[in-house]
Every structure is written in C-alpha cells, then in structure tokens.
Length: 589
Ligand code: ARG
Image (cartoon, rainbow, N blue to C red):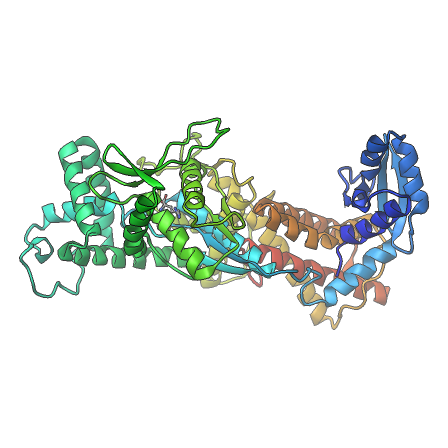
C-alpha cells in the first residue's frame, strides 16, 4: 500500500514528466506549514532554476497538467513557486479504511531484506552497568525492533567487555585478599573449585578500589597489566578465576537487562576472539599492513583530508597484550565470515568516535570489510545530572543500573498516587503498572532526544503524566483502551471509516496516515526521536478529536461506527510505535 506522500509523488512525477521535466522533481513532502496546507511539492523551483524560467509559471503549468482524480482536494501555487497540496477527505478516509484492514497497518513490505548486525549495550564484566550502557541498550533495542519491522534480518550482539586490563586488576585484587587460593598457585594441577571465590557484590566493590589503586600506583598497574597478559596467554589458574568473574557478572547483567526488557541473540565478549586476534595480528604483520612502532604493533589509518589527527590503531602492546581495537577488528572479521551482513551498526557513546574511525579504517585497509558493507557508529550523547555533568549518585559514584531502575519505579509509583492514576487497582497491580510507567518514562526520555545530544537525567520531569513524556503516552493509550471497552460493553462496534466531519478528526486521520513515512524516516536515519515525535503528536491529536467528537453518545450510527474504527486504528498504530520504543501500556490505570 502506498503512503500518502508516495501516492502524491506518483501523481506529481507524472505531471512533471508530462510537462517535459524530469519526474524526480515531483517529490511531495509533508508541509512545513500545516496551517496552510497538508503537503507540498517544491520541484517547480528547481526546474525553473535549471531552465531559467519563472518558477511560478512552471508551478502553474504543473498544477494544470496534474491528474487530480479524487485524490486531490485543493492545490495552490504560493510564494516563489511552491505547490501547496490538500488531499480530499474521501481519499484520506478511504486510505485509512484500508490501513485498518491491513495486518501491517499499511507499512510497505521490504523490497530487499538486509542482514544487519547491531552491537549494543556492551557492558563490562565486574564493572557495574551505568547510564551510558543504559542508553546504548535502550537505543540499540529500538533499532532492532525498528529494523526487524522493516523486514531486515537483525543480529543483536552484546559485545561484552571481558578481556581488558580490568580483568588483570581484579585478579591481583583477589590474589591480595585471598592469597591462598589455588588459582594463584602455579604448581597446582588439580581441579579448580566449582564455586566462585567471590560474589558479584564483592567484585563490584573490589573493582573501583583496584582501579583507583592502579591509577595511583604504577607498580600495582604493572602487576595488573602482567596479570592481564598472562590471562590472555592462557595461564590456567587465571583463566579458571576469570571464568568465575564472567559467570557471576553475566548473571547480574542478564538480570538487569531483563528488567529493562533488552534482549540479544548473542553475548560474544572480547575474550571470544582471543585465538582470532592472535592469527589476525600475525597475518596483518606478515602482509605489512601492521608495522612496528616503539615495540608495539600498529596499523596506520590516517587519511588524506583528515582535519583532525587520526593516530594509528594499536594492535598489540610491546608486552604482547591485545587491546580494545584488536578485539574489535577480530570481531569484524568474525561477523563478516559468520553473518555476511551488509550493515554493522555500533550503538556506543559518541566519545568513542575516534576509536571507531580507526577500527573501521583498519578493517577496510586489511580487506576484512569491503566498501559495499556499511559500518556505522551510531553514537549517542552523555546522560548528565542536573548539574550538567555526567550523571552520578549522591555519593559521586556511577549509578548502577539496578538501583537506577528501582529509583525510577519508586518515582513512577509516587507520581501515580499523586495524579490519582490506578486508584481502583490493588497494590500488586499498582506496582506492576508503576514498572511499566517507570520504564516508559525512562525509555521515552532517552529516545525522544536527538540521539547525538546530551540530555539531563531529570526523573521528576520524565515521570510526569502531562507533557511530552512516556507516562502521558501510556495514559493516552489506556484511555483509548477504556473507551473501546466501554463501547464494547454498550454493544457498539466499528465500521467503515468515512470522511472526517471536524477539523480535529481530519488532523487525526492525517497523522495516522503518516505512519509508513515515519517508520521509513526513523529507520533510514536511525532516529528514534522521529517515532517519539509522531507518538506524541498522535496522542495529542487523539485527545483533541475525542474532546470534539462525542463518540459514545453519537446518534448517527454509521458515523459512530466510523469513529470507533478510527479510535481502534489510533490504538493499533500507537501500540505498534510504542512497542518499537520498548513501551508497553497496561490494560487500565
Ligand atoms: N565495553 C565497551 C564500553 O563499555 C563498549 C563496547 C562497544 N562495542 C564495541 N564493539 N566496541 O565502553
């Protein structure tokens, strides 16, 4: 099913061709001035410029040539030569009537299904997940949902940080605390214990201490680096200990991510690529792609035209240890071999931009990824506290994800009580609703921003039931559900959607008719905020419509049936889009 803009673009392209111009100038877009018209075509200006003609005259000519059929309501040439377009009410209602009957709600089927790897969340073993990983998880999950809906094959991979220096730091910290453990005894040849020697809580306490110590004391850092290297080289005791670290961490991470509703197809951490890193580094050295530099091995990635210096990618340190970039390069090779994707998207803090530039260039230089495959760092901004600095707890530590979620649920619960929401529900149901509201608040607050911008974590604002918030949207959806429930109880049901009778009804129809364009635009530019804007406008438009049109009391039965269908379509479209954003509305509240 063609979207409204596609249908109009078809008509206008034919008119341009008819007048001897290139059809591509017939592109129709949504109006920048919804107060004046619904859609516009600006192609006459471009045509006139190239042909040195008067743009208004070209526009008049197009309007005269256009086959208006029963699609166009009104056309007007405005300003220097814009064509303002309004569609006919019968076209609009007819379109929505087919959309509501379509199981894909009018969304196009994909012309070609691509294989897309999405790398998101990527928390680190033994380090608590913080708000940065939260952003990555929320945005990455939204990309997966969106691209899957568009018909692509998505491979969701959680690139766990489990092989870096923090592992060596922890090994040293545990050795210092429990020196007698068999993991540290190099002559030990028995079975290492099944039970982990430390809990995740203990690990998460040990890590910041160990890291602070290594920062302050070069000797401690030296030891940590050595332990990391020995681990990477397969020292059995360290490997056994490390496996415990990973196991207890992953259990905690899974629980946190589950709570957040974030899922993956794979959890392939950096360590998974150890053997591949070895062979890759050797090959790159043999082929002269990597070179030695002060004992280390690097790949030059500077390019002509760089405005900022792009330093070489470090593959191996002089002590033989591998780095973050080494595992990313090996990961790329593995992904290409295993999944043969046409796109790989990294949802990682924008501050890692240089790292990805280096890795992507090295991967191309080494022939690991050819030019046809798109590598994209879909970076995101920082979550700041009200002081404008990266968000921390009151004590100045990074906020752990689990604690953060609990805080959000609690706030959502308070807000519900305050707003008199869910007052007829029992405590359990209220708690359940508060979780949905809290998650919606968190997700929407994040996704509605321009992805690359920083935003301020203001939980008081996010959880409000008024304004552009997750709770407002859920509340609107629940309201629609309750109207439809009431109608059902009265024995009323929907029928064919007929042309609008009020302004607000027409506006609602227009926004519902935009869905395919909204999905395409969000997917093309990887911009969840486009979905958020649409959802908010739709909820507002619905509330206006419902204020003007007294659906349940309407005397004209066919009009009432049409309105009920329109409401149902609003519900279906909103549910779909909120689902993409990872938001789920309760049945009532
Ligand atoms: N573990 C990394 C971090 O916490 C993020 C991993 C992102 N993915 C990747 N392939 N580098 O910063």
